[in-house]
Every structure is written in C-alpha cells, then in structure tokens.
Length: 199
Image 1 (tube, one colour):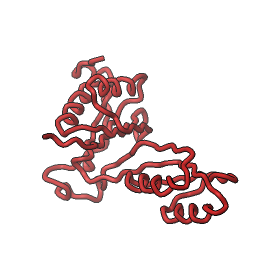
Image 2 (cartoon, helix red, strand yellow; image 1 turned 60 degrees about the horizontal axis):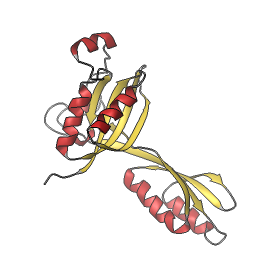
Image 3 (cartoon, helix red, strand yellow; image 1 turned 180 degrees about the vertical axis):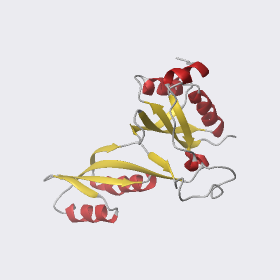
Image 4 (cartoon, one colour; image 1 turned 90 degrees about the horizontal axis):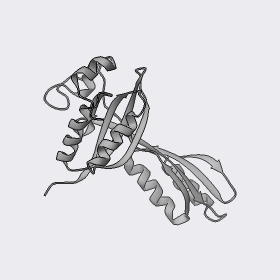
C-alpha cells in the first residue's frame, strides 16, 4: 500500500500570462490535490517562484514533476523532500473576546510570539508566522474563545544553505539543489524549440 502524504515543491517559472493557469490545470486534469499554493517574485527579474503542496504518494509526485518539466515556462523544479529546507506560513486570526477572556487570549498570543494587528471592542486580530505545526496549534488554542475569521497563506520554502556555506556532501550523495549555480533563464523561443508545449 502506497503512503499518501504532503509533498512540497518549488517551481521557478517565467512571468508570462496564463502560466499559473497552465500549471494548476495540469494538476487538475490528472486528479492531483493541491493543498496550498503561493506565488511571488524572486531575485531574478522576470522569474517567479510557485510553492505548491501536493498530496499523494511518491509516484504521483514524480509523475507530476515529469509533466511540469515539459512546460516551456517552467525554468526549474525543486522537490524539497530531497533536501533540508526552511518553510513558513502566515495566518491572520480574528478572535472574539470578552472582558473576562481578553487577558488570557493576549497571554496565549504572546506565548506564540504573535502580533496584534487590529484591536476592537469585541475582537482582536492576530498575525502569526511559523511552520505548519505552529500555525495549526495557534488556531486550535484560540478556537475555544471563538474564531470569527481566518486567512491563512500557503507555505513558502527555501532549501537551507547557500553556494558559499555548505559542502556538497552534507545532505546526501551528490550535489544538493542549494548548491546549483546561479539561475540562467534561456530565452523563451530557444527553450520552446527543444521542449514541446502541451497546451
């Protein structure tokens, strides 16, 4: 029986129209469940990083990676399950308060090193940053007081280390993805000649 679990992928893509649509459509047509999706700019002009959490067994993830590599707007795919990485999420949580619960709610928030971003007579809104476990634990601690609204971002991640400070043998045999050379983005037309566009 294959093990179904969450897998964290970073996909570097060109800033082109409909790239996000093409990638999510690929997952959707093959029945892959995207649990979380975040997109943002990178240090390279014209390149964005998509961080996707997909649920499935290892074979499903490898098949998805092979399909993604065929898209000519995809520059690089990083499978974080093969590396040590650091990841974060952010959540905004609006919690109902009463005069009796205000102090306790604020104490719990302080224990989680959260920040109050809005104060009302009957509610406090907190900002919490951390890994998935911390975010989930904070929400569960606040649930008994009455959660009015939440907004949770998707996970973002980077491979630990850099070209300067990690020898190649630290994590596993061979070169780690953290040690790959500076990203070089081929012109779109040149890459398109070598890889067929499925869409």
